[in-house]
Length: 195
Image 1: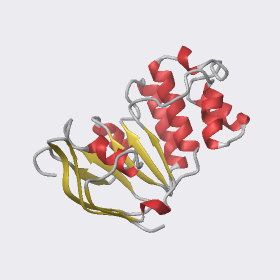
Image 2: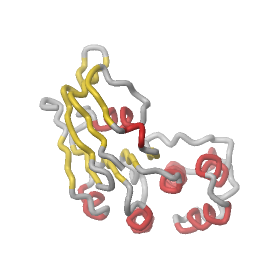
Image 3: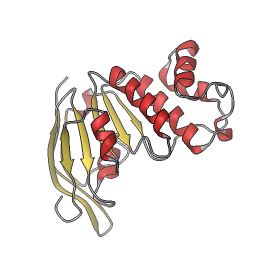
């Protein structure tokens, strides 16, 4: 895979500049941590990379050659469908494989329950399973472990370390321990005043 190159990327919402002349090369197969305070542009940058936001100016090169999956702070699940169907519909993976992940991540017994009956932490786990099982080259993680207890979080991280071996991963989090556990070496600092 080629590297994703961002050149002089600018994004504003009305009068608020979120990204100004942002430049970076995301090397294929590497892991990145977007560090910055609230409002620094972390989620906006992920949304741009997911093609959910357009840039005002600048260039993004080679992104179209990547298949992308993501875990965002909002769950983006079909509430009426079961956990199993929310995952299989998008990933195309077998029911047996999906159920094995639901069980690993503490969701045994909830495979067929409508997602609307699940707690926030359970919905987050369904979102994570869906994202890691989608055949992709780029995984975007926007505070993916928010609301999860330590035991489940560690189980998920251990599984991610195996599954994400050759993927480009970009993470936002407020917890440095998650960066360490995911073996992320590349830190990109986004500052509200200096983007």
